[in-house]
Length: 318
Image (cartoon, rainbow, N blue to C red; front, side, top):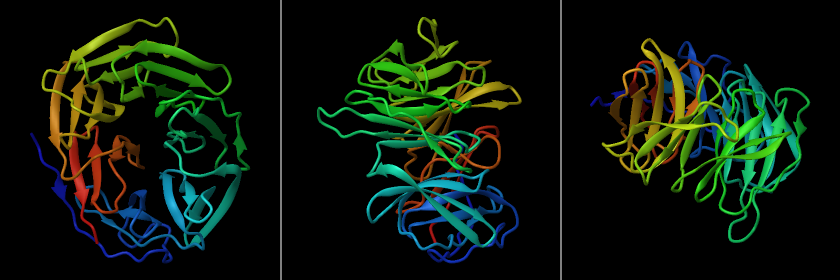
């Protein structure tokens, strides 16, 4: 078992002007800092990084999901709860409001290329959920029709093509296509985490049965293959990601209950556990391939996971 590496912290000012590449050399990615309600760069490489100063802007941000590669974020404002696209280049920051979207969402996901987004609004109780697809975020932007998703549904993963998402209710896993609609993929005991594989299939974890499964195709009728029984236990899978490494594809599973990342090397069916200093809650891809943010810095430090090197890091608070 390996522990995360400590990297140096840096005092950043909320909503202060930020240079395009920061003061610390290369920028690994960008994250939303909930304490200062701003987007900040991760300056330097994992192991020797710090959080830089926040973006300039005149909007009070309640939450953002960031595309590091596009230097773009989909944000909700703290005032009227409206949604906007925030873009930045050097010291220049621009915003564009998205008409018709307001209020907090159950989950927001961006595609890997940062061009598309999916937002799931869940009213709770007996109210139907609503899924919204957004396209061409860096350009004019379009909002697709918003199909109802039933009660108790959760948004889990975005396909690389930006057209499909994985969703789960209390006992079923679904793929929802923005044009073709929803298809049931599998049943399970309260599926909490799933991800698309690099070859177009789907991985999903069943925490009650302690099993990891793969569907070779993300479509109805695809046969599910059990990859592994999680004998060591993944008590609370909250996020998953698949990435390529020197020894083949592997799947990282964030365990929110035990504060660790479990990595399955598929070729050898070997499971490795990495302790995380803090409480991981997500996997959001950063600039560097295979590098993910496991949370948003706020009350806790920023947590990072390198899927290729199978290493975790944290960036201390200012």
